[in-house]
Image (tube, rainbow, N blue to C red; front, side, top):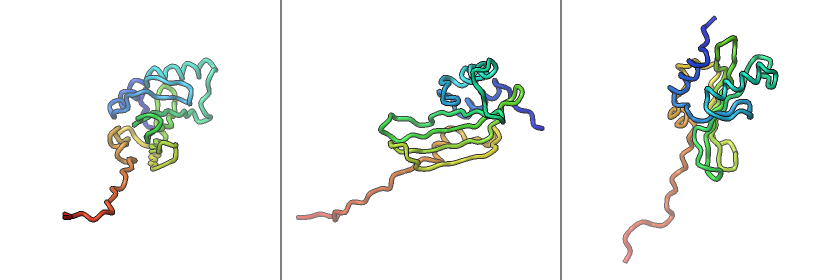
Length: 143
């Protein structure tokens, strides 16, 4: 059985990979990573929240956001909490257009902390570059 990192180590590993923005847990708890997970775990212990039967919870963040009228990139982590340790079960990175339609998706199952891409690598893996349009006009010098 592998040793799972505690909350401080888990948060440090994600921050070292570049994931240092705001996160959302179970679509309800929004804020910085460590405070957010702590608040969610306290709510679970008090009976206000419940993770799924396997002890998993959803942790989401925007990797790239430029407003509602631009494409965005979202990263979802399915995290399992066992005893005092945290383990990422699945990582899903999706690129969506301004209307919310899927452009590109990447999924990593059972990643280790070392196999999780950095923020820049994750953005590069799902970025969609528009095709360059060629001019239909003839190019040349006219007299």
